Image 1 (spheres, one colour):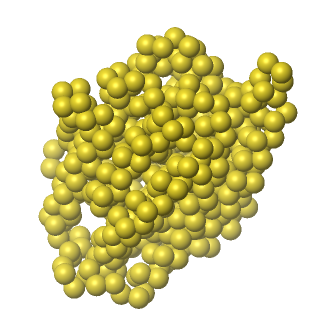
Image 2 (cartoon, one colour; image 1 turned 90 degrees about the vertical axis):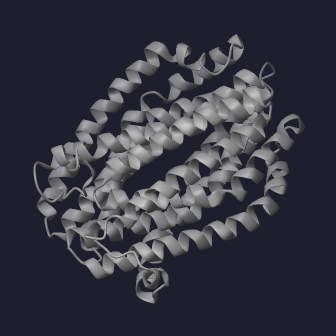
Length: 456
């Protein structure tokens, strides 16, 4: 049991076995984290109504936009921690972790100030229906005030995973998820706090998980030092974190902006489609988890093995791990096609909403297999230190392709019976962009320029 909570050296043993042993706890953890948003949606949908469900979902693109700072720090941290751990460089590892904590606190302070100021103007810019606008604002304001809890958890759990410890992060997240579910029910169903209750439940649970991660790191002194002196930002490590994380931060920022642009089109179809989109995205979040989990595992696996000068293991693990991930997604795709309507029924009793959500979900189903290719191979490139190539690929798929396709296909589908166009074209555009993204990622990976990007 004690060994279960020790950092895992992924430079030994069979590559696929190492990846799977690392991925499974992280996958369970990602499922638990996805429950944060899903339980929020189920509780407000059941106890407040479909409009409240739409409000929580409409807040998503703005929240994601403000989280780009954490995305950048987390990416840089996971790469540097994995490579320094693989190379057994204690001082560099200690200074990297200290810089991550300080940068996260600074980013949290920035979001607490800027977030509430831009939220209402952005909601108006998105053509958010007046019936849900105040709920959206209330939800986002509370989340931004407590953003440091979620920010610290995401960064510190990333550090733990970079050290090869995906089990501790899982257990702390499960504890926070359990608290979140209880508080959701108490605040919304018992105290009738509505959308605000969901927000309060989320931030309180996130502070719990962040505190537990920090506690765990203080007990890992045999690997690195967590002292006040290391919290002072050193130029070398800060600049390296920024250099590695900036492309991912820019990617997430551009992706979030594109989602905001697309959200405006989504809102034009009215509250029913907004609510359907929320349901689809909640199910989508679960089905995407293997891709994101394997992608993160590939980043740690590649980082540690490159730090240990084992490029042969990186290539072998990337190939075999991607095939395993695609097989898992194929199974999930079949589940969606067979039981989609039952999944949608968890969120609402409105039959029209269930039917609409199920139709949209079936369009995306096959794309999840292709997303495994994109996430796994991008994870390998990031682990090697090449965060720029995945950035450009993401920009290509989410901006250059997705936005024009969404607006263009919707415009082409307008008829006298559908003056706003066919809402299904929103999901067709997403499937097309995913397919092209997988192809481009495979080509860039095969060219091999990422092999020359290691920071060590």
